Image 1: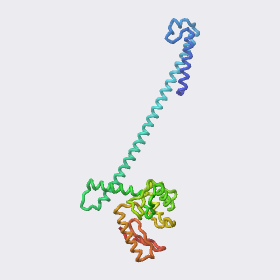
Image 2: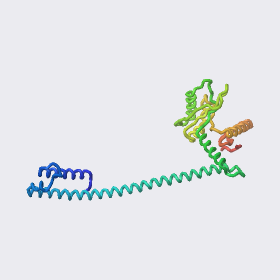
Image 3: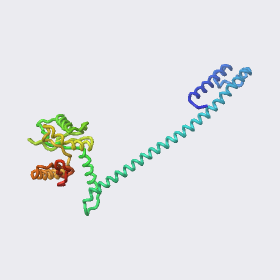
Image 4: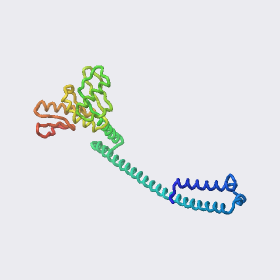
Length: 282
């Protein structure tokens, strides 16, 4: 016999039914009124039948209880197994987090070592560590930004017009699908006759890299012939870049028949059909 709640309900109903028959036969209203005197009112055949029926029900009930006990053992074993699997999963997650933390700590240690390697003769201090971490955080933040230079600024420019203009510029780079912009703003103090640069924040550094690599497509549009895009540089990086731009202009004046461009803080020279070669770096 397999245990189930339905079988338990059937057994309960059968016992209640036989009890009600017995109560009716001895003319009492509840089980506490069933006494020896009341049972003596029954003739032998009906009494024998009641006893036989109750004995059969008791045997079936004992068997059902055994099945219930077996079912409980099975459920207990399954619960223990589930708990073990859950513990294994949790331990696996803990191990994964620990490995991630170790990896990140190693990465941070490498960053600190890299940013302090040039400090010859100086010991690693709390301030140097903090400065290294600030540098990494700054680079990470700026990696999601890019700058737009040369785009005209109207005297009464409003935000929605600027947002629409920036989205049009991004679309003209042929980046599909167009990335979602998180923030767009002019930077610097507004001056008459000058176009302030526009800083654009995207969701990821990879989106910024893709936009910048396709920025040359803007030259195909008359409205953007004087507009160019660049990374969000620090003050020191901007000064170094301006120095490279000045050097590149001098090189163009000396030999305008070659193609010059700046990439990764270096000036590259390229002839048509030939590979580019590095000329200057900073």
